[in-house]
Image (cartoon, rainbow, N blue to C red):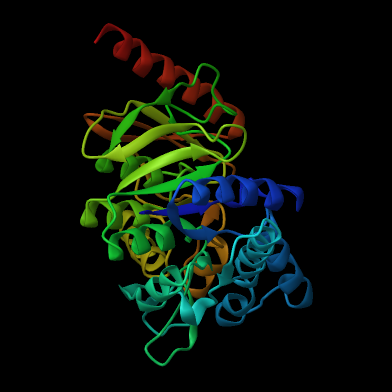
Length: 358
């Protein structure tokens, strides 16, 4: 029997109907003689709904308290998928955070760094013919206290398990079959890329691409694990493969990015280091006559973090646009969302035009 680790992102489950369809797909794979370890995110938008509930009670809710409730969305999602599997006659069980085998540092005020992955319980369940279903992004410290690996960290959970189990690849299911030369919802003419190197995917993720968690890509590279991207519906087509081979020419238009402007380079450097220490995906764009720090992703509260650090800052409507090629990542700053889209289209045309002649 062959063993596979599968991860299903939140876009897989816009409603409870999809839990049944995914369970039927998994049952078919199990019937072919496969063994599966499944990592599931919460339903689409569930984590942000929990965040909204928390901030409706206290807009200034502390990070530790917030981390105490946000993982519940993924736990619920994994539990619902387990129910779907059992309805299809598949013996399955839900492994809560302290049983996932993901051992982290003991922290409450930021994403918990992963220390190691233990697979004893997973092997024991598989030996009994039981399919483990794990909520993404959840672990425990050495005292078995629940911890959270952070926003969008289900990818990290799946890659860590794949590496610890000694498997060559992990399958990541989402609403696109792979990594595109740009976000097709933003840039017309974006095309899927068949193969990408780890380094290229890291550059895209670090600059705001919403495809994979950056740390998951680093861990995959460390363990030599290929990441296979698959559609989460229909015939579950496989698309991009992230590994040792490939070449990326792509543009990231990060419409969720935040660009902060400072009075001088010294202050901007200090703010940049402060944001990195606080867990932000921060960058220091070089723009003549200006001192900027840009943060990707849209989920990190940049004004609050800078205020807590005592920084005076100006934040407007600017957005970050990044062109990634074999020459590296070139960061641009657009005045607003509309200009970001226009600039992204121009850069994408330049990159794909060169690719077509190569």
